[in-house]
Length: 427
Image (cartoon, rainbow, N blue to C red; front, side, top):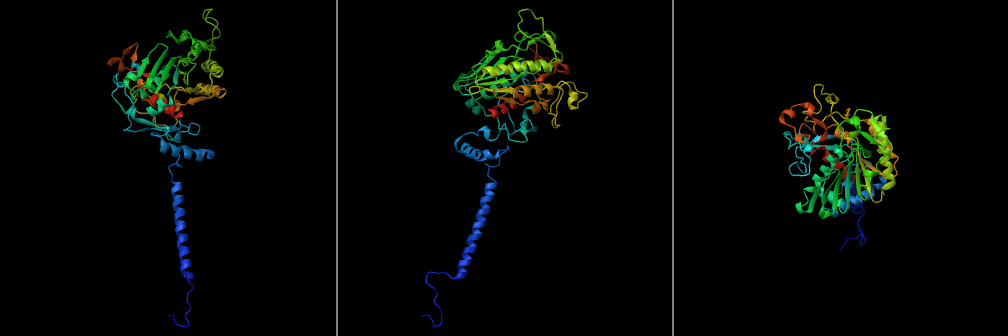
């Protein structure tokens, strides 16, 4: 019984102090929850892009990334690498002792002896463990399975000189290891070579055309540059073999760089080889590239064929370029140049500018694989004296002579593998 004079609290209502306390506790919990959400959101892996993104693409990219993680057994390279926003040439080589090539010159039977440095006696191996790291993005590793899936039912054709063959052999070697022996084949030709991945109904091909345009030294090579004549306005005879291809990768540079004025000819060789005109290298190069560009624009359907152009591969024939005043060529070099933006005399910026200007004016989109700057640092990775000449491996005595060093071509495995890593990311 309640004593008289004491008010009875209303049934079903809480005292005011309890209500105030409860509200304060709930608000405090809400603030903590909001802070937690904010923290999780700001540290989400889907927002930590390694390449800068345009604001209007961020939501779709986030969604795509989530789908890739949920539904794929590998990460699509476009998640990490955007060629339109990431300057892959801006970066550095980082030594990674755990990095292992996808092949060796003994496990891949398709490497020319010219590039088989280990087979030819090279004992040091540090050059195999340098990894290119762009500053603006993460370059995805080369995934052979992904490469073959992208090529399923397609023809990939590399067209150009021996450095393009260097890149082609690298690409073939990087994928062939996961293909059973009976499901792959290689047919070598003097001009046209074809590797078939039968299970994928894909071919990876190479076509020899050192100038892209025609010359008197295309098939039967003339050793003396003074006798070479380039038909800067003719390409059809070679280019008729480049149609019906899904992915075309072109290059041309080193054969233009004889150090001499180039003999250029318009019209036919039918009247002999008279009537040529001697031109400065950039002028002749521009005329030749314009002929190539006109062929691409008039022949290639960009809805059916993607076109790539690999920039010049640098030669390292002057050790003074990287400060080794007493050195000879790239002989005995075992480490990359560390100086940021190193650029030697083996890469011609005028020629690089010609490529940029010609490509910019083309109707058909051309994806430029910029390998020049990243390769400039790699004075250590050329075939050097671990090569062949005249079909014969250099003897021990010949290997001791620095003048015999090949500082143009690259060991395989080696630097061209990184070119293909970039190329695959661009696909």
